[in-house]
Image 1 (cartoon, helix red, strand yellow):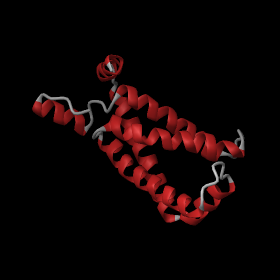
Image 2 (cartoon, helix red, strand yellow):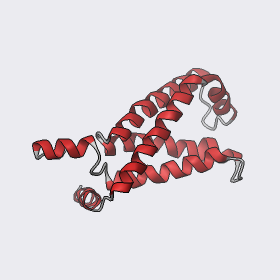
Image 3 (cartoon, helix red, strand yellow):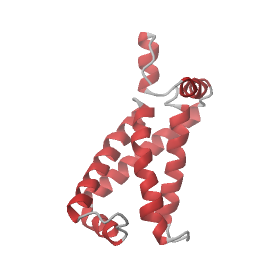
Length: 152
């Protein structure tokens, strides 16, 4: 646990303001993916059914799509605001690992497979913000400065 506190402290001290704009963009991308999941569940369910590595039933796949969409919507908003950013990022990381290795990787490393590249970049950014935290332009920072306590 001490190592995690040291990483969090290093991230809080070495956070540039331009990273906040990148965090907001990341939150918008994740929120947008959540909206696209909700608006087109049939296509997504067909894609996952084609690459069904674990043998999930269609009911289980449908439930997973809705859970992922909800996590993306709420997590995206939390990341945009910079509110409990590390928690929101940690919730997103397993979803993106699954997207990279079990959904998008099956289509191969090609230029037309832009979903794979987007997923890899978003996964990298999620890990980055897990380390560096929310930054000075965030609700977490405002709460920390207002009460003198640390919420992130």
